[in-house]
Length: 296
View 1 (tube, rainbow, N blue to C red):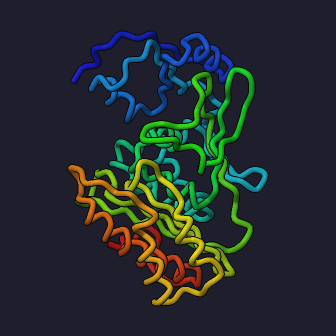
View 2 (view 1 turned 90 degrees about the horizontal axis):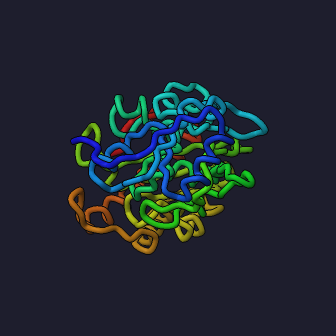
């Protein structure tokens, strides 16, 4: 399918040049990195920008390092690079597991975590891991740079808190100060390239501190505050897990669509929560399933 709309094409070499272009086009430009979502939307007529701003020549956006007790991931960092990073696998295994579930190998070679966040589709695999780690989205505008808490980033399906003159430069994920373990669980229709029917991240910290986040079961990915409140400070038990499962219906708002029914998503979210909690708790003790092993 060809791209039928006309647009200006720019490939700036600096962030300053990129932000000037955003100001110039007053919200009528689209930023291009991997393009795995954007190109499809252009072909399908879902986007008709006046300009594309290609950021692949901006060197400072190619970043993957720990600095000042946080992991910094630049806007040009692909999912393949996250998967290949021993640093990510060791220090942020939930993000590593989630990255492995994104689309196909070919797509992961181009698709970026930041592009995933900016697309803001409800099923994006990168969101739950960032939510449980309290990540911050870094945005550079014409006037200033700001950090947006990931909890405030998603404002609706395919909508974010990004302003029209801003470009996302990366995300910052604080390095946990205590021992943690976690898991990302994804339900798909088949093995291979598929969007999530349900996505779940669980992070457990020493002293029984729990963080839980869902995607694909509501208009935006989000933390499960009621489940976390129930679990906090308590040792995991079968009775506690049963109580947590009963709260799932209060945390999610799934729909019926081509990929799944509402009822199936609801049931599987409960199953995934139970398995995710048990797997994360076991990993905290140095046991449990190997990284990347499916729990479904």
